[in-house]
Length: 340
Image (cartoon, rainbow, N blue to C red; front, side):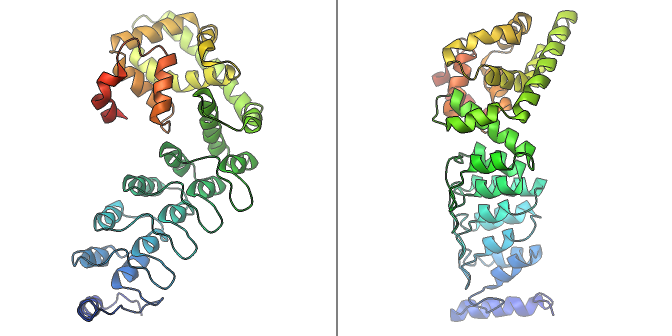
C-alpha cells in the first residue's frame, strides 16, 4: 500500500509527531512526512506539509534532506522546488556520500526541467564547486554524463575546470577523453578553455594544444569561414540589411572563429583579425555599435557569444572589441547588472 493512500492519516501522524517531538519512521530512520512526500514527488502532499512550516533541512538515516530526495526523482515541477527552497531547504547539504543537490541533479537525464532546476539551485546559492566522496564536482558528473545544458549553467556560475577527482582527472581531461561520446559538451568546454586563455587566466597548455588540434575545432573553423563569406556577401549586396540582426546572429560564430585562429597571438594583436573578419563586415559591425548605442549592443552581443563568461572576461572582451569607446563601464553598472 502506498504511503500516501491515506493522506489524512499521514497528516495526523505528522501533527502528532510535531507535538511530541518525534519523527515519523518511513523507508529510513528519522524520516519526516516531508521526506516521504519528496521521495514520491507528491506535489499536493509537499504543498500541504510546507503550509505547516516543517523543518526542511532535517536529514534521515542516509543524511538525505527532503530536497535531496526530491532531486532523486526526474525533475517535474519547478514551482515546488522554489517553494521548498523558499521554506528554508539548503541546496548545499550533502547526503552520506557527499552528493549535494547539484551532484544528484547532474546524474539525471538532460531535459528542459533539469536545466530549470539547476538554475534555481544556483539562484539559491548552491555551491557549484562542492566535492562528493570521490572528489567530483557537479561539473565532473555533468561532463561524464554528457549533460550539455548543465555544463553550460555550471560554467556560467563559476565552476572550475581544473579540479582533479580521486583518480586525478580534471573536468577538462574528462571532456577530452569523452569528446567523441559527447561532442557538444567538448565544444562547450573547448570554447571556455580558449576564452580563459585569451582573457589572461592560467590554463593547461597541453590541454589547449590538444583542443586546437582536435577535429572538432578544425571542423568548426571551416564552418565559420563559410559563414563569414556568406555574411560579407549579404552585407555587400543588401543596403537595407538590419545590422542589429546581423550582429546578434553572426557574433557567436565570427568571434569564436577569431579566437581560435588568433589563439597564439596576444590580445594586442587582435586587430589582425580584420583580415579574417573582412573589412566590410568589420565596418558594419562598428556601424551597428554606433547606431544602437554601443553599450546595449556591445554587452548583449558579447553575452550572447558566451553566456558563461564571468564579468572580468566581459570587461576584457569589450575592451579589445573596441566597444569601450562608446561608453564608460563604471558609469553603467546598474544597466549592466540588469542585462547580465
